[in-house]
Length: 190
View 1 (cartoon, rainbow, N blue to C red):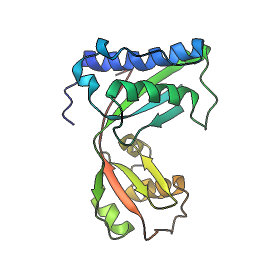
View 2 (cartoon, one colour):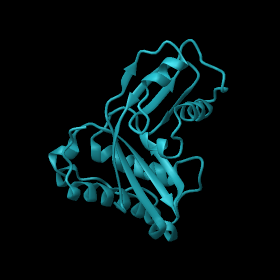
View 3 (cartoon, rainbow, N blue to C red):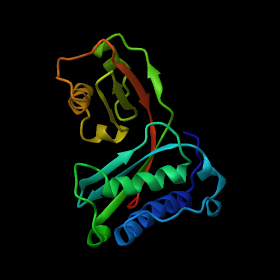
């Protein structure tokens, strides 16, 4: 991804995510964004994911798969959603803020994959590099590329992704579509 983000740019985006969450903890809603205070490269339409961790454990993760907002708008929206709208967790509280570690993933556009079946998909996947979206009429799920850190075997990666989508391990619907993407990711302790 040719975004040319400097270390300072990354720190600015991480500060925006943290400020959004901290403000919402106190005021109950995210702060208003003044787009003019951000550089032009932050005005590009890009999809993001914001992942929150606490003591090394997942504490929230919400994101966008398609670029429908500017980078800063999408980032602020997903930072708020990760902290307060991830159905798997209780909303983040103010006393948790110092224990949270924020990771930002900026996604490349989705690339449709031409796959005949599950075996064909496994041959095309690039472990450690590709994020994967699978979707059919009734099933949809994605894993960011960093999930390879926990599920390094392609078969396990796909098995867990199918489970996340609500599919049985042996199912491969006829209407299944697959999309790959990559991420530029950075976090507060980098």
